[in-house]
Length: 406
Ligand SMILES: Cc1cc2nc3c(=O)[nH]c(=O)nc-3n(C[C@H](O)[C@H](O)[C@H](O)COP(=O)(O)OP(=O)(O)OC[C@H]3O[C@@H](n4cnc5c(N)ncnc54)[C@H](O)[C@@H]3O)c2cc1C
Image (cartoon, rainbow, N blue to C red; front, side):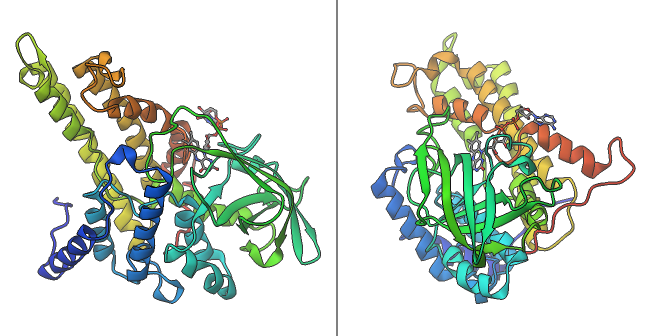
């Protein structure tokens, strides 16, 4: 079976259009230097420009600010951005990608018209706020409270590992609307304007600091102290939050797919051609070639899993275990790749700015990020738990996937 897509002349013409447009719009900034305040604004402008063309959320409905494009065109846009090593959206906007889709599935018509165009056109940045004390893998254990008071909810609580290093417009969060209520039936989702009184955002110091994509240099702790949120910003109805979460989590756990290559195979080729052992380049040694082949297979399978999920999601093909499968494989693959590269080139390469550092510090940050990446969007253990439930391992009934609906 050949499941690598072949493109029609019409699709290739669209690719040229996208490529030409990107060539004059993508800021020319090296990867590791992207996340300064000035560069962040340039990439935000790129997001707005993509949004104005309908290319930021290509398959989202036109009436809510999306592109209304077919899945094949969406793949072309994402592939062309990947040539610049940029994801879609090109700046950190986790809650837009996940919350936007959730509003599309669970929001009222009024909420869709009010919130989605700003998100889908890149005018608003949104962070997702899930994790908190007692609520990491066990999201339903959240201790953030939302108490109804007239036409408002009053939020109190704390969320950790949140967002990124620059500005934000909306906070997309889950809270208990019945404090002692039945588990999973006491939760609600809110799309909260960031500028409400009582919201404090404090940067956290973490393993991955300073080394991720645009807008992702660090994470934050966010405190809600008597934050009054309009009831109009409750999404999906009171105490219906776990069903809304099924959309959000389904996408975050890998079912949304992604387009893009892990570039560390190419980087490993470069490094092993450059560095020598016993008088000849590393790449000429059999053991190194064997590791490179393994690395190639890993990254290629991961790319194809993600491409498949991107297509399945946008084409509304029912999914079961595919989301956590690709997410798990990518995470474990990243860890194995960083170990393989270190085995080939040696640990001295990790000493940044030293005579042995031939990757300009990138291998050092890649190694840290490969460890850190095991956690967000459900840990590898949780991905396995979900897969077992979906496949039906050790149970009579197979768990259904959440509704993603866009
Ligand atoms: C870089 C990074 C970015 C993040 N970004 C965000 C963000 O933007 N927004 C946000 O809300 N959160 C974010 N997170 C938080 C992330 O979602 C949590 O770290 C994750 O859900 C795990 O929760 P925890 O850290 O509380 O660990 P815990 O849930 O306490 O887990 C601890 C360990 O126990 C294991 N474990 C837990 N339950 C089970 C089980 N049932 N079966 C088997 N093993 C289990 C876990 O796999 C883990 O190894 C981010 C985290 C990181 C590291």
